[in-house]
Length: 247
Ligand SMILES: NC(=O)c1ccc(N[C@@H]2CC[C@@H](O)C2)nc1
Image (cartoon, rainbow, N blue to C red; front, side, top):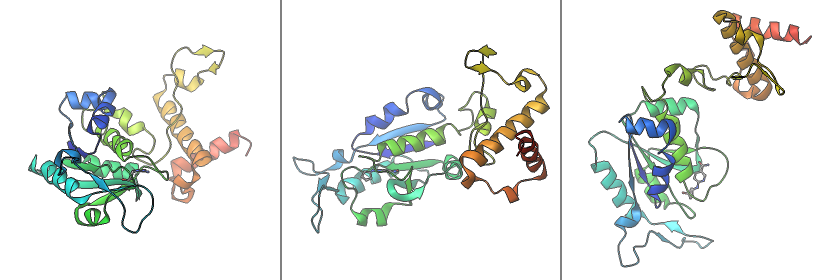
């Protein structure tokens, strides 16, 4: 997968995507990235990339032309079709389902704004979709873009050592929250590892983990689960847990 990032701080993303799973995916050629700085395409000796907003008000707005030139250069760098995404609080919320959709594409281009944002005419003309990583305002789109890069990179085939671990994550596969995880030591002043995980009984371990995911999702994020839509096995696991709780 190729990801181009249009940003006034292209190195920012590069550093955020240089370590861990994403860094390894890039080393393995599973993901290639390139940054494009609109300032490199800005005219005049001040190389302006922003200007004052029509209608007044605080702050500055990013100019169309430097963005248009940077986007054109990025498009031309590779023949593959590209999905152009603008990161902003006005975008649709990023979900794991959307991440899976994006991870399957050959190319993404992430547009990162600064200041008060981008001239609306550019967005209307050039953007395929606008995405938000959450209902809060950041000083630039770069951190939001880095989130998209991380989420799609880890889903590239071969990115995670054990492909399984991508499936067990929260929101993976069935949209439930992840179960708890434990490692050595078995005994600790903070508590003991649940016996089922020490049993070697993989069927029981899988059931316990599923039950934990169901219970945690119901307790912490009931908005993510529709109990009436659960299968018989899941309903049985919940009933058993409630019985144990004396519920
Ligand atoms: N929640 C988000 O995904 C998000 C994205 C971008 C952002 N800030 C940039 C700065 C100016 C404008 O381009 C938007 N804030 C929040």
